[in-house]
Image (cartoon, rainbow, N blue to C red; front, top):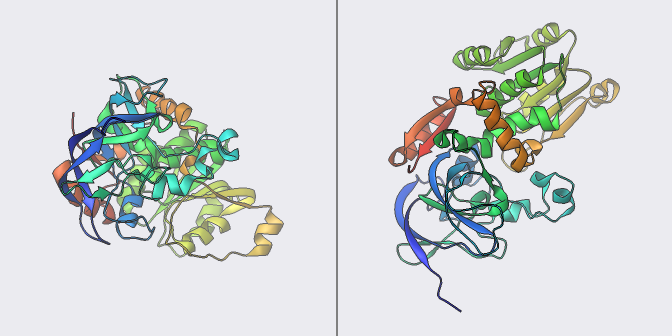
Length: 374
């Protein structure tokens, strides 16, 4: 058996709970099986990167995070069938492809979702990355670990995109923007003429606003605490905005929607905001939940309000999308000018990754994207 071949890379390493990202020299092995090696052009930074850095989710450290990568295929494993060197790809979440959920078109609920995305290794417990001291780094974060100049992913979570699309902007389509847009289109299945309320006007919530416009919702409301975000929501297609600090948020929403919303999305991870989202629904309304609080967080609601109103609460992961179809669809909508998600993005150089994280946590930047290579 031939020796494993490695190449030198630079990676942003998280070595301990809450520690800053540190750019380090590392090595990555060549792809095996159905894997592809991707030269990362840019990677979005998502709330999940920060909560894993801070160990709200127990991913083993030291680790290379990053899970909204976009880049160019540099090498392919012997079992790769549909991708080739030079293809432009967006990297998305990992999934097995053969469990009941995957077989039914719901890969984001894969039976192996947690180990394939959060275990710090591949499906067999192996690492692709070594640090400068030849010690393994926990990797395969969301089946990619794209806070690095190169990343290994499976063929099924490397999604080919048109070369005319601006690759440095596309990474967030693999997670955050896919989550918000997919929640509206795939999960809630918002209908033309319906009413929709986005609780939280961050990158996910505003992606949902954009998708609600594409879906033909006639009333689109954004709720947030930050007036600049509410102003951007109006620019992106919201018909109304409400400041979450107002004492009469629910009354305002019911007046705007004519008695209660058909659809709502909670993206803040705040259990009190979730209660407001449920209370804002009209009869037979549905609220989608995408906000990720610390593990074990519970929430309360009025059971009779839920029961008598026929309301639904729906958990949503990754917008319940089929990435091979949905991500190219979002790219097409962007190229047509109908899904201007670039208005959410601010670009940072790789050396400024910690500034990007700080700006995201302070709410200064909606969706940081880290430029890693060209």
